[in-house]
Image 1: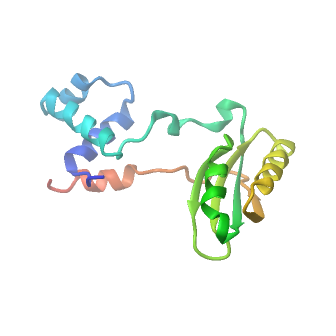
Image 2: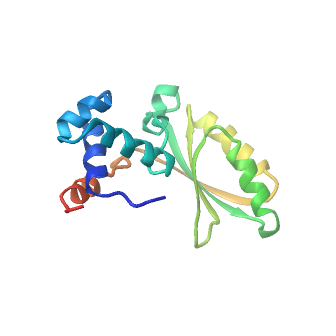
Length: 158
C-alpha cells in the first residue's frame, strides 16, 4: 500500500463532503484534471487504501443495532484454524490480533442480547477458542474517523 499525499487527501475529503460526486465534479471542485482524479482513485483502490463502501454502513440499518466487543483467548496450536473459522461468522465485522491477555479482539453486531448470546456461544464452539470475554457497547461516542488526519495531510505540500 502506497502512502497517500496531499492531493489524495483532498480527493477523499471532497468525497466525504459529497459521496455521490462524479470524477468530473471532483476534478472541478479540486481544480485538477479529470484523468488525474480518476487515476488517483484507481491507484488508491488497487493499493488497498480505499476499502469497500459497505464499511460505512450503520449496522442498525441491518437490524443489528447492538455492538459488542469480544476478547478471545486462543489455543496457540490451533490459532490459524480458529481465526479462519471466526472470519466465517457473519456477525463478526472486525477482528484484530492483540497483545495482552487476549489473542483477538472482535467487533460483533447483534439484534439484541439473545442474539448476542447465540453469537458468543457459537464463538466458544470454534475449535481453538479457549475463552471469551464480552463487553457490550452502550453508545458509540466517536465513530471511526479519518477526516482530521486527511485535513492535516491535505494542508501539507505534496
